[in-house]
Image (tube, rainbow, N blue to C red):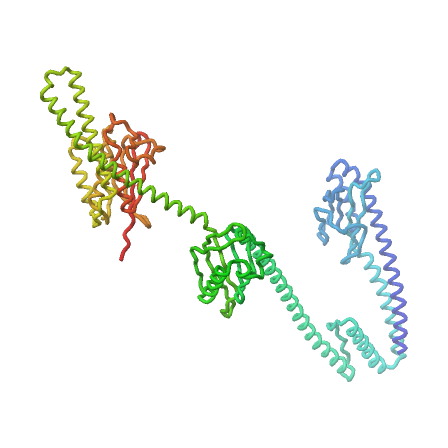
Length: 614
């Protein structure tokens, strides 16, 4: 015990001395480095002011005479690296950064080095900063010397004390004291990684080994517990982030859905399934019914609508919830607050929970009152138009039919006049007779076309299979007198057979192909293409030519009665042929249109619905 007390006193004294020397020497070291930094700062003022990094580097490089200085640097007032010095042996562990780091102000001892900075001033204005990194070799050498002295003194003292003290006392007391100290430290600091030094293989040594084994087991359990706790904290953090993300996504989705529902122009409402009370209503519904959301929510149909309507609505709602699928109500009358009776097109959809029990009923209603009124008005106008068309057709048929007899008389008497009086007429008189004859012929053609046009509206259609390719060839053969002395390049694609009235469809093709022949008359080499293309719901047919074409702004007039885009002196015709084409195609359920450009040809199209198999 006396040896321990003596050693402790000696150690305390030595430690106090070394600590005092250590603190004192560090202060001296800081002052020395501060002096060197201030000298460097004074000598680099001009280099900074005149932006001369080389001069600054040379000044800083003067520190190489101090072997314990590892590196130094000059920074500008903006924190930018201006010049630096690194010890040539590469022992520096501190690479000067390009920008002045945060926290590098004053001095600090760290990792066995002294880091010191001092400002560079010019006229009391800071224009830069000096940084110096210095090792502690001199301090360490001095401390080592002191340590050797202390060790020597302790060795002599311990040797003396050892000779005085009983050997057995040292073997028992020291391990027990060390063990008690370690146990106390472990209890206070919860550091289970420390171990007591193992001594002799006696009872004390066995006690130390047992104590160390206990610490090892506690450390293992503590590490496992800490790992589990860290993993649990990480999972909690991840789950928290996931929940926050889900909540944020859900809120954004709700805002998005609310925005859609509120801006849809149709009425949208939601009823709870039990008592069919309104739980959701959009702005369009408020405007339509004339009630605010506050008036509607929590109420059912009986609170707003006449009993008969309310009973009908609720019965339909129960039907939808029981059926389990969307129910479409094309027309549903509803009595509104300010706009009277309206007609709605409503769709109702049941919404269920996970167990298949009805939760809500979703309804979407479109106000079709104006549309229904427009449809009724359109029906009325169509009826009037059909009646007028029938009257007009009957009139045109009657007029055309009644005009044929007088016209035949005119033609007959003109022919008699030519036979009996031609010799007595001069040239002008004969020209007048020719004019009358030609006008009568044109009038006859016009009357014939009008009669055909009138018959097309009321003649019965005889639907059958029409072999289109052979029909086209027949039409072209009928045109041989007109085309026998012309050069025409025919391109005829693959054409499907049709279902329709063969006579009417032959008239369509005769008119379209005849027009192509007529309006390519001015071309040395005419090109006429006939073809078709199959589409989803219909088949489109066309006749295309390289003739005189037409102004596309008048394309809509081509299929009207008496509509002509060329003078009769240029191309003969009555202006009824294409009107007949449109009427025939419409009766077959198709449509007609045309495309063209002046002097660049034209294309005439018509479509017929595709046949439904089976």
